[in-house]
Amino acid sequence: MAVGVFDLFSIGIGPSSSHTVGPMRAAAVFAGELKETGALERVASLRVDLYGSLAATGRGHGTMTAVLLGLEGYHPEEILPEEVEERLASIAETGTLNLCGAVDPDGDPVLGVPLPYGESDMILHPLTVLPRHTNGMKFSVSDADGDVLHEATFFSVGGGFIVREGEEDAAQKELEESKKELPLPFRTAAELMGRCSSKGLGISDIMFINERASRTEEEIREGLLHIYSVMEACVETSLKREGVLPGGLKVRRRAPDWHERLLKETKDQDPDYHDPKYWQEWVNLIALAVNEENASGGRVVTAPTNGAAGIIPAVLYYALHFAPGMDKATQQDRDDVVVKFLLAAGAVGVLYKEQASISGAEVGCQGEVGSASSMAAAGLAEVMGGSPGQVENAAEIAMEHNLGLTCDPIGGLVQIPCIERNAIAAAKAINAAKMALWGDGTHRVSLDEVIVTMRETGKDMSSKYKETAMGGLAVNVVEC
Image (cartoon, rainbow, N blue to C red; front, side):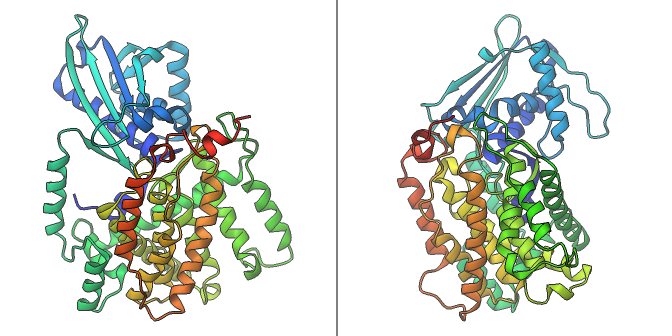
């Protein structure tokens, strides 16, 4: 299907969309196929091979545990953090994987196959990169005689999206065919601008019309408001947690303390009032809160990836609390802002997904944080009354100043520099939107040119700077 706003903003668990959400989704697909073959009861052994970046940073990114949960039949958009902890504790204690044994959507138990599982059943190949993508994984199950019953290879290509080996061309063809069904399809920013010009509509309007090809207006609105409610819940949960993040780096959670300090600074004011002089502190707080929750494996919105999940919520928070006129806005007004913001941001996200990549393992962090910053800048410019040209300019400025951004997480954990990087990129997005709104929409460098440059920069970037933890901060900072 054509990439839509609900593909770019999906609900899942942390810490990584490409290393946690994607592998869990692939494993769940494999488990579902196995069940459909009727060979489930004959399964006696399991083997999982992880390649490239999945193997290099999989432990810190939760890849191994995500695969186990997926093989049990859990899906990232449905499983809750407490279920994650419960199932992983059970597997560790019993040494048994309940293959295809997750509960169904109605909550009824499903009969799975108890399968002995040990670490030797998951083989890591950090130096082997399969031709399609660095995030490769192969699943295979055999019977008691060692005969293979079912096997499949998948690639996690960023943002939780997965592609099956051998079906890449078919998937691309299906994508192109589905786009023909859209009322106003676009692949490039130039095409998007052309649609806006010919129809006299804004970028969010074009995206809304396309979404209506598969959903009703009410479903679109309710779905986007639900997505923002999950973003808000993520922040609320994070602000209640204290201590250090898991993984061994002993990174202290800062969001709870920062929130308490901000409340003290405005203690004599209306609790709903946000002092404009503290706008950046609030933006920093929201970004940190979301990514601290992501780093601990909490429930987040992939926007468009988990590693960059805090940028859009932080900039949207700015739009709702600090944009001109929002102090007098009704709830209806605020809901309208959320919907419009996410549609415009989603339209720009489609451009990155279509023309380049949102995978840190493929193009570095410019594909994750850079794309999210660009999407957020577009969303903010849209809700602040920007013309299509100004919105496109905002997206271009934000990405132009994230070009070349490397992905070098210390210890393979989505913590340093990832958490702070979200806050920095959110501020960049806000500044990009403000700069664009002070212009008339004309500019020398187009968004398409910047997207192509990002893609080419990613190709030229050394693999050690693309989510392998083999370069940059990952090797120059001692993990203790």
